[in-house]
Image (cartoon, rainbow, N blue to C red):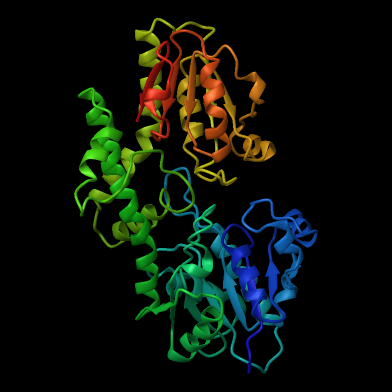
Length: 431
């Protein structure tokens, strides 16, 4: 008997997965609690930009904000966000809310057909799927896990804005509580993932693999950021040092920068929280997190020091920042570190303008209280900061730089510009 598939959560992870599944299976259901999101998708528009409107218009899936839409589903995939709170501890409220919704659906399902299989893709710490999600669904539904419903875990590996490493082209990890459920997952995911599947030996192994993937990247970037701080004190350009070191065959190509988004800057905290619960205090991971979290302050304070040494620090000083999203060519603002730069600069009393033609101005104001400026507002600047390397910003940067006055600063956080292209009457600095 074939499974009827539902995807719970239609954001950057859930929608691309839903669209891929709808191309291979009939009756695919998409559920999200955001009614505006659902209406936008029904009208054929994805405001995240991950799915082109033309492709979405041809999507055969059913979109709904009513949990009852999942009553016929026997294969439910959970792709809700798993953020951190102000204390940098895992915020499980979205995934627990999803469990509550699923429990209510399971209680109302008619008997017969395949045993419902609940597959979580959200980033969690090892043990959470079975120890917490499974228990919550049992308690709220009155059903028995392993008999009335089963669990699986398949960590998402979506890279927003990446048109090369797309969903289908990234090998996918699958895991389940028993072989029968794993076989069902192989059928569903195997139909859309051309890069192949990796069957993890347990759900806990798959959960741990997910958080380790991004923890490893986080630590490597932290090393580069610490190197950048040291190079700064030695008056060396980090980009030049890494370019030279990169001529060795086994040198890893990591670069310094701002670490934000919903994965690299968040996942390590899920792993460290679990470690601390088990009585172990992680040192390397948390040290890396501290370095990366402090980079916005380091950049902002460097800007202020350059303003002082260049005798441009005055109450009327104007700083223009290019880019607000957490990475290039995406609209996603989650956990962006640019607002931290804005906050630190504002504490010195200087006027800070943020320009980003890629992101939604309403989202920017809602998330961070930042009112995006227009391009024409970027005049008479003392500092121009290239914070996010959107293609459109790289195209506009030369003309903006050309209009800067004598002695103004050009701050290139990702070393995306050629220093030789910067006019001699300006001061250039890169991380």
